[in-house]
Amino acid sequence: MGRWDKIIAARRENVLAALRAIREQKLRSFLTCLGIIIGVATVIVMVSLIQGFNQSFVAQFQSFGATLVQFQKYEDRFGGGGPPPEEERLRPVLTLDDADAIRRYAWCIAFVSPERWYSNNLDVRFRANRTNNATIGGVTHSYPDANNHFVQSGRFFSAGEELHSDQVVVIGIGIVEALFPTVDPLGQEISINGRPFRVVGVFEKKGGFLDQGSDQQMVIPIGVFDRIWPDVQRTYGCVIATIPKKPEWVNLAIEQGTQILRERRGLRFNQPNNFAIRTPDRTIRMFRQVTGGVSAAMVVIAGISLIIGGVGVMNIMLMNVTQRTREIGVRRALGARQTDIRQQFQTEAITLSVAGGATGVAVGLAISKLVGVVSPFPTSISLPAIVAGLIVSGLVGFFFGTYPAYKAARLDPIEALRYE
Image (cartoon, rainbow, N blue to C red; front, side, top):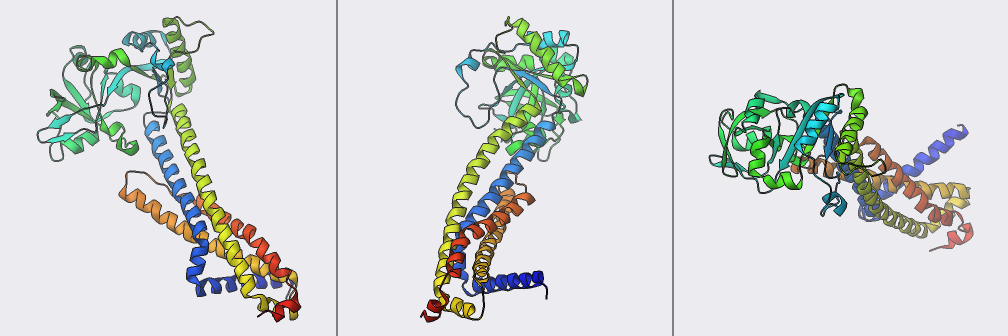
């Protein structure tokens, strides 16, 4: 038998001995590894939730087209809460005239869609059915092309209906499911805050983030919107959605739209923009920064659990050294070296930790699956997170098992044989 064969055989025997010890003392092993189980399970659940959020968020924004460029009053923010800063509140609103100027002078932009949105205290009804989970927009007939948001049945309202402020509405599939579970919605009249609107079209299904996406939207001509919610025009103005004529002209569209708005607002070259620019890439990047911060906080919590678990492993291994002192003396008397004893106990500590890590992975996967089934939160299993959890748990066992292993290896063989 070669040198490597002897090393592999010795390690295999150490691992099998550790597994036998775990099997014989299940409760003690479980309590020892509890911190590692919690830490690894927390990492798995956290990563699956964050990755699921990211994938859902990215898919939703990309569904509106990677070339969408929006000009708006307020900056995007996630998880910040509270009112916007005073500087943003004091900004002048974007107007329909601003949108018209971009349409006329930004030669690289194909479609321009001024939009106003409202969702507070919105009551939408059809006969006995109702939904209060809707968002309504006042838009122009250019909305579908500028937002890559087309109807799947019926039609969008025409320029003539927009001009005459007809009370027509195009609704998302989520509103159809709430109000028209058994009825064709086209041609039906719904009530929006007590006002009648005729359904002329249904948007294609897009999917949404936590059910608050485009499937819960409905749009009406912007003139009708301004009559019903005039405060939106005064306070928030409008969002101006644009699409460049070529995908590679996104930056040019931003540059031209920015220059037009700066000139209309009389901004000097050294003054910052008093409006915000939103693109899918920028929004996704901001969202990932927020989820990255959440991930970092969860990693710290998981790290604390792993340290606690590591201390438990070290304590149980010190107890094993004490309980097996005579065994260590016998092995030393039969020719075992200090290295053999050290490797034996270190392997046992690593095996115990990896077993706890594997249990934590199983628990984390089960919780992630359960969350994905019973809640609206999207989850996505991450293979790198599983591998990382097992590797980290092994490193915890190696680190915290080193001191007990060295203590066992340094026992005096004669004293160990005398130990009772």
